[in-house]
Image 1 (cartoon, one colour):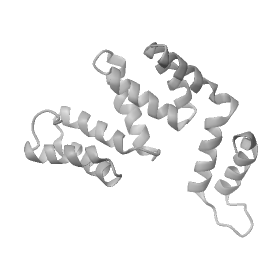
Image 2 (cartoon, rainbow, N blue to C red):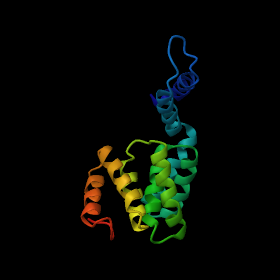
Image 3 (cartoon, helix red, strand yellow):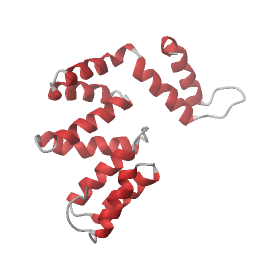
Amino acid sequence: DKRHFASVFFAGKLEASGHVPGAPRDCPSALRRLRSVAEVGPWARTLQTAFELFLSGDEAAALREYEKAAELGIGIAQHNSAWLHHRRRNRSARSRELAPVYLDRIVREALPGQGWAHVRIGDLRRSEGDASAAKAHYVRAEALGEAEGSFQAGMLALSGGRGGRGG
């Protein structure tokens, strides 16, 4: 319940510390609890601001707000920052540089729905000429249930590991 984020926060801290009598330390559960708190607390207002800026058509300002929230560890902000940087990569040198950083962060931190991030990293590696790294990311995306990963791995195989992205 979003109204009780303080209790969820303290439960997450207890699970992370391992100081729950009769229960082992449970880092994955603690992480889920702490992430949920980060996404509903008053410090997460920047998400709403970013969303409103995006809807108004101001992608650059929305991206700045999402980046602030992403630095606080808010998963959806990390996703949205990665998506916006990837979307803007052909128009902005900064986004071209940061798109892989945010995509990699999603993959490293095992955020939900990361299959699409593996596909995009695969695309970046393929465009850089690193077919083996691209294939590894496409295969990982496929294992996470992302159909596009399977498709792109197949296209890469059909092209002999050369050329641009298929589809």
